[in-house]
Each structure stands twice: as C-alpha cells, then as structure tokens.
Image (cartoon, rainbow, N blue to C red; front, side):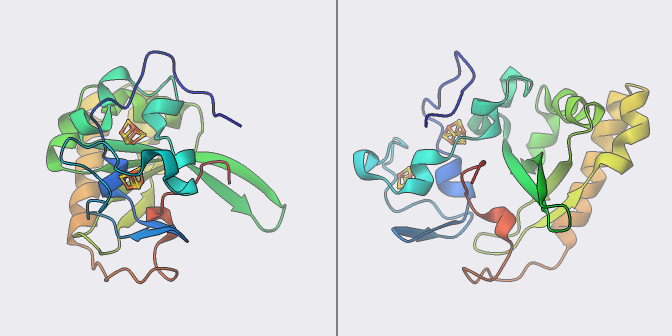
Length: 195
Ligand code: SF4
Ligand code: SF4
C-alpha cells in the first residue's frame, strides 16, 4: 500500500537517505555515512525500477509528516526526520515516535527545527535526538521530551536550540563503535516506518 505523503513535497535532488542511513536489506547492505554504490553523481538511482524493498518503502518524516516544517528538506537543512515505532513488550502495543538526526552542525540553525521539535514534544510524541558517529560507526541517540518540556511550555525557542546544541555536543564526544550489521544500533537502519 502506498503511504500517505505530504502534498507538494518531492525528493527532487535530495538523496540524504541513500547516504545517511545504514541499509541492511537482503539485496543491499551499506553503512551510514557512505553513499550507496547505486547513486549516480546527480543523486538519482541507477537501479530505481528494481531497487530493494527497503528503498521502495522508506520516506523520511519531511515527506510523511505535515507538521514537520517546510524548510526541513534534509538536503537543504541537514536535518533528517524519521518515524520510529516504540514497541512495548509488556503491553504488546506500540507508539509512534520521531527521530531528528542532526547531520551537520549547521542543522542547528535550520529554519523550523526548533518549531518542529517543539510541536512533537507538545503533542507528547516521543522525540529522539540522533547524532551520527563517523561514517560506518554507531550513533548517539537520546529521548529529549523531558529535558525540553519547560522550554517548550514557555515557548522559549533559544532555550530549545541551546538544549539541542548541548545534546549534540555530548553525542559527538561519545564513543562510537564500528557498525557490525545485524548487531549494532537498529535506530540507524532504514526501515519501513510501519514495519
Ligand atoms: S531523505 Fe527524504 S526527501 Fe531526501 S530523498 Fe530521502 S525520502 Fe526523499
Ligand atoms: S539502491 Fe537506489 S534508492 Fe536505494 S539507497 Fe541506493 S541509490 Fe538510494
């Protein structure tokens, strides 16, 4: 079934998901931070018609979620948003959260970042900040609802950005291990959001 996508938003020349994500599909394995071998210099895909299922079903949050602000197209903002299912083994239920990946330091200055994060926190959607390690290495990821709560309630945008910056700095200095596919950091992997 085709997912519902935000009208008027197209990938265009963006191929952030073909670079920034780990893909562990029977037909294609690649590590985060490495450009897919099937990507052309103009960012199109040489095997588009026969691309793996993972690529067929993946759309980032900017394509899927209307409340993610328009300027946050990943290649223009350095922010990659993904939906993220959180499964409770006890109650056998799941909630849908969102992961904001800050791909570069400049991502912190992206128009709409603070507003989009704050909208999710205010709506009590589980929100995670994801800081990639070097290419091929694990990331740091932390849930940020609690730490942002007061800044969101008081609509203090500078405070939201300051906290995001601080968490990014901590994430950057954390230890990052080489990714071994099938063992490390499933949050890096490109997965169909509703799988
Ligand atoms: S990151 Fe989003 S906008 Fe960019 S190519 Fe992937 S799905 Fe399209
Ligand atoms: S196979 Fe094509 S769509 Fe999939 S990651 Fe590679 S370039 Fe992107």
